[in-house]
Amino acid sequence: MNTPKTKQGKNLEDVLEMNRSLLIRLMRKRQQVCTRAELTQESGLNQSTITNIINELISWGLVVETGVIEGKKGRRSIGIRLNCEPFKVVGIRLARKSITVALYDLGGKEYESKQISIRNLEGSETAFSKMKGLIAEMIEPCKDTVKAIGIATPGPLFRSEGRIALMTEFPGWEKINIHEQLNLEFGLPVYIEHDAKAGALAHWWFSDPHQDHGVMVYVAAGQGVGAGIVMDGKVYRGALGMAGEIGHMSIDYNGPQCECGHKGCLELYCSTTALLKKLNKEHAELPSVWKDLKSGDPVATEAITQAAWFLGFGLVNIVNTFNPDRIIIGDELSDAGDLVLHTIKEVIDNHALPVVSSRLIVEQASLAKDDILVGAATIAIDSLLSQPSTLLR
Image 1: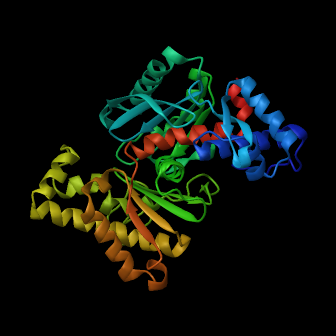
Image 2 (image 1 turned 90 degrees about the horizontal axis):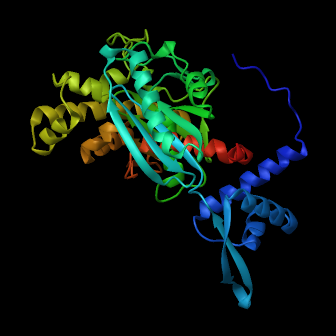
């Protein structure tokens, strides 16, 4: 249960932490050498505050000076930049069939990744034990530099409680408090997030073109279906962290029974799990389905078109509810390519208000890496940058 915060004001340390976070984020956003004068102009802080904070961050090793650079009218300044490499996070993606763990620095650079397969028959406790072993392998060679763990999971996720409420097709995870157990196991801050929300934040940070303002929805259409909603750079989570759980939004109240107890849930029609079942390929790999599509197989083409059609109808509801600027189609279903994107666009154009759909951008995920894995690390990085002093632990 969420209880209201009693803290009303901010003491000097809170203000200092906020200013540290602001400057670090400005430097991260620039992704290049800048000067103290530029930070003063962009932040609105006075020069002495900038000087004191930057000197402090240099003493932490988080900022380094790069030498003299020429400015306007012949003015010379000392360049500075973030020194991300010494500060690492571990990003984890938990899926129904695999666990992927990777090592990143504060700038989002990936150093190493490992993936293992898991099966629902082996049970959630065994799968979780494998996850912890994989994390330990990743941390051990650089344990002094790893500052946090970020994990992206399927949902529904009780983020405020650190556990999954339900993982369809893989029961038992709802009995594990992932956040608490990983924190006890590794003694590091742990940040847990729904996979779609993690993917959404990764795209807000790293996709091109960069978006600073507005509403972006990232749709994770994979073994389940979820949506991550980012508003002006902030992930919208809801009271318990379950906002965007569109996979369990009913599109047919007389439809098939879902494990959540509802009928006609969206993910029963357009997840890749549902797609494989429709094609009688539950034990096959998705690349074989995409290969059939590419070769013009009519059965695969029809099944994928229908999945995209259903997803499009679900997204009409999201368009009407959140009025986003952009919708990004990510995860496994997006690998089917233009057929999925064009079908979704057609459904939205035909069933949303024209004045809305005409101003909406619908696109495929653009990150070269696994969006959700990158997002798991991004959630941890974002949390660390909100409280920079945690980097000293």
